[in-house]
Amino acid sequence: MTTDKPAPIRDAATIIVYRTAPANQIFMVRRHSKAAFMANAMVFPGGRLDEADSDPRWLEQVDAHSHIGDNGDGVSWPLYVAAIRETFEEAGVLLARCDENPVTPDSELGRFVFGEGRRELNSGTISFLELCRSYQLKLSLSRLRYFSRWITPSIEKRRFDARFFSAPVPPLQTPLHDEKETTHGAWLGPAEALSLYDKNQIQLAPPTLRILLELAADWSAIGRAAHGVSVPMAPQAIPEGDELHLVLPGDPQYVPPGSERNRITLREGRWVSVGRGA
Image 1: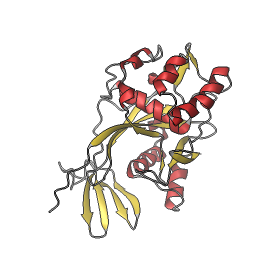
Image 2: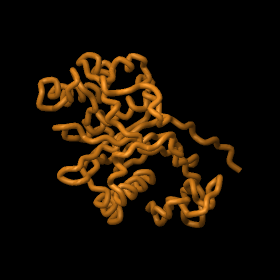
Image 3: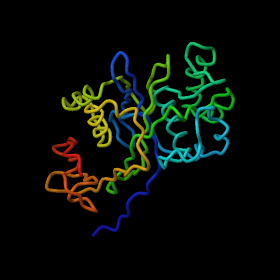
Image 4: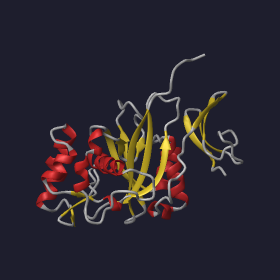
């Protein structure tokens, strides 16, 4: 009988950055092979909540269109900050404005922010808050739409309560992976990403797989905010023979049980989605 306690759960946030021209696509990054969590997987840019993301000075660093408080989605504002920070660090996409104008790479400010500013941020020379305050950058929280929430199962050594947002890529910005935490970046349509996964050309984590399946079936879901506080996807791990089943809400084996199969199964080294639950 094991006495190991589940690892503590840390808050995290990620953004599904998308575009609709020249095609319906999502920007995805490949995590470094030495990453402690989801090494080599193609993911949406994001990461854990840092203490600095909750600094009250952020309350002065949001644009006039943003709202801090109860957005009806049960997500606190520091998670919005974390999502924007991590996406800028990993993908070079900045959801912010200066003097009520988008920050674009063709301006003097933009050339600095997307160049030296981002390099200083990723090297730890400057914090994200310092960067924004120094150059009067106001975060565009209103551009984010809360999409879903996933909690890492208790069998994992590192666990996160991750909130997924979606946001269109800002005008004129070109995403670029950071070559530090990530080693590759690409615009992919949901069906294209799933095809690459089926061909074993990319790796996907369970939440990413499920989200891509949802968007492949209904692209319009990308821009729809989740209504109210959504039920978190908190997989319960059940080993069965040579397979590991991550059972999800609605499945008969979930606690509390549902009536339709809803799980992600590790079968011969690959994740396979089964059912949708009820």
